[in-house]
Amino acid sequence: MPKVSIIVPNYNHAHFLRRRMDSIFGQTFQDFEVILLDDCSTDDSRSVLSSYANDPRVKLAFNDVNSGSTFKQWNKGARLARGEYIWFAESDDYADPRLLERLTASLDRDPSVAFAYCRSRRVYENGRQDGFADYYLEHLDAHRWTADYSADGREECKNYFVFANSVPNASAVVFRHALYEAVGGADESLCVCGDWKLWAAMALAGRVSYIGEPLNYFRSHEASVRKKTERTSVDVAENLRVVRWILSQVTPDACVLDRLYRAESARWVPVLMSRKIPRGLKREIAIQVRAIDPHPIQSAIRPAFSTLRKALSRRWRDLSAK
Image (cartoon, rainbow, N blue to C red; front, side):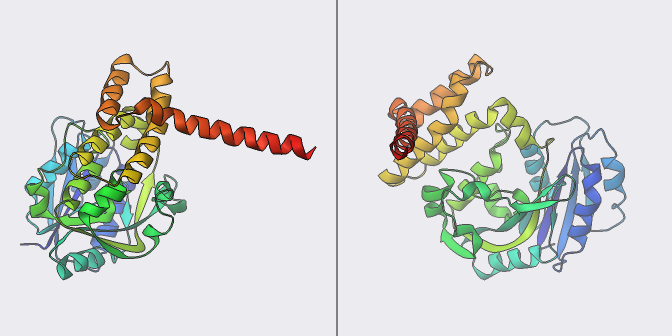
């Protein structure tokens, strides 16, 4: 039995696959199987993936009909997996040769660790690297994701996961197969936030181990699911659903909740005010907001007044200086 099952879910990433596969077979840790999934790609993906079929560690699992869901593919791969640990190596990303060695060691050292992950460098479609994938977490803590740490998973949910998905990229994570099954796998009703809910669910069952060295390379491009859902505001509705679920599992401190309500209002207010968003989606968002925040209007107004007050103060200083 292999120690790690490496699952590569793919859809139309033919031009990224060679780099991805080379970074898998080039790992310093070699006790693994590779499950290659394809969700009815319309490019040359299947030809590229099939070229690896002669390796006895490789299993091909191609869909006859497009599933339309990243998380259905994750669950399919997990059902086929035989390893103690799983690594979802997304087909458009790639990894440092030491990623698997370092992350499996974290899991081996401490049986209470639910999953281990590392920092991710951000890479664009043309290969240009630009900063880190955790840039959007700086407002939560400017230093937390710059160094190694191990933390209680419930505390992670109360202080970080409740605000955002503090695991920027699935390709940076190695987790326990048995725990994935125990929490019910990925939520297939979610289009983009299924990973966030999954990491939070697993964190609730143990500890989280983090390596601050960037061993993963996360590719950002316009064809990604994340970019598509941002354009339609589906991500806002799913964001609220996941936050609501996390709040049903843990109770953050009052100051954290107050900060959360104000942060969430910055997401949902522009959507509800937009004329471009379908009424049905607005209604769903409003329902989720009411379920999370006991005083949504107050949460929305306070930041607006704060911004106005700061603007007026700056204007007053400018006029006074003249």
